[in-house]
Image 1: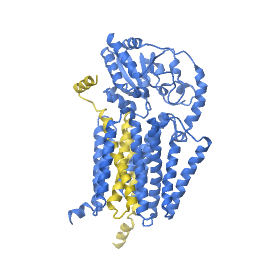
Image 2: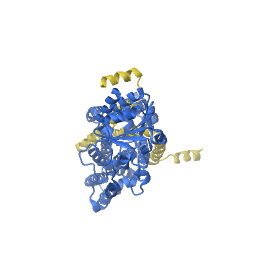
Image 3: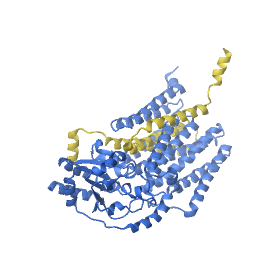
Image 4: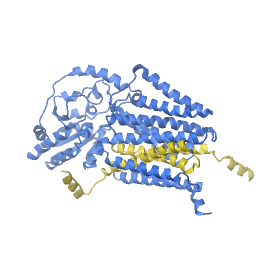
Length: 119
Length: 470
């Protein structure tokens, strides 16, 4: 019993190894999901993935929220990082949404009305 | 167990992150089809909200004012910019958003350096991944800004290099940045090192993108997009945050595939794009081919209208010229009239027409062109011999037959739309200037081709008027 327990304990991966596992598997997930996208949706896709890497905003949030006494310099750096990250993520999703709205099939009457307005 | 202690529990937060991952992946898979794409993007955005809220679940919440102000200002800057940008300016907007993302990663590494006493309080691997993300993030920030400036025409879009000094300069900058990184990982604690690392990688980013001509810009933006993803993933390892790792790595993987596909569509390799071989070799070749000469036949709007009205099938070949003159609505208007006359109208979309893959689809979708009428290159190429009239609107290099036949052409081997196989060809162009690649297009002197010079939107509107009068 003790040996079994010991084995389980020994098999607990270090944070680095755990993170590397997540890293590698996510790479494959990204590959699997994305490689099925048709050419025609590549611009929105690039824009969409661009928004997703706006997740870097979490890094800024994390360090600011958990950092007790950072000092003014670090606070300024993190504030700018947070600002950049927020612009990346919010702008990215909004721009993608705008692009994709255009692919939506609109009801026939709506299209007519739209064209008349524009004309 | 109090509610607060549950909310801030690491396992609980990891579960919430997992919910966010599921939403990212489900959302991205929604982006694979035009019908599910809008929903997919919104699901991914909702996943992002979950991830942000989860991150803020900390027991001892510091700097609340900075966090709230930062998020509010960021949103206040981004939303109007994203809502106002014209569809033609979309590529540079993506470049800009990508750049600030890269900048954020680089700054986070710097802050991490400062708050951990030059990584003296954390394991070595933390420093390693942090330094990696700082270099890539800084390259991405400055590289994307150059891409933005070029596409926005703030700076000349042409290739700019230091000549023979270019490669040594790049190697020196990157080598210097890596040397700073190695010193930091090895335990050096001078803040100057991380600043130098960021500056040197930034200069490397500038040197990387400045030599690249406008035609290759989509590939570069996509590459930098992948870079920022990888930097975010590395930052995630260093901050021990699974959300950053997963989201960053998904972008890193997808961005790499996308870059690869774009490069293949242009018959280029990522390496040749980055090394910037296009600028130099093309100009030499362009000089040689301009001797090809030939007679250009010019035509009028009424002739074009008559030709198309009595055709069975018309294929519209849009390019960057359509984007520049915002002609997509006029094109749609013209196509409707043709359809009313019983003409079958299709749109031939080259994967790299415009400045980004799918650029034309976005514009045409904006003008309510039915998705089914948009044909990808492989689907439409077999149809050109059956096509009575192909109307090329501001596209050039993607229709250049030299890519099939002329082995010494810089674009030789690039898959093109076989427009020259159709019964007759009408080319709308502002002037006889060459395309973005800077090379001649024999399509323009083909006996089957007639040219309608002028702004694309104006020309199309004139043709539409003529069609109405018929």
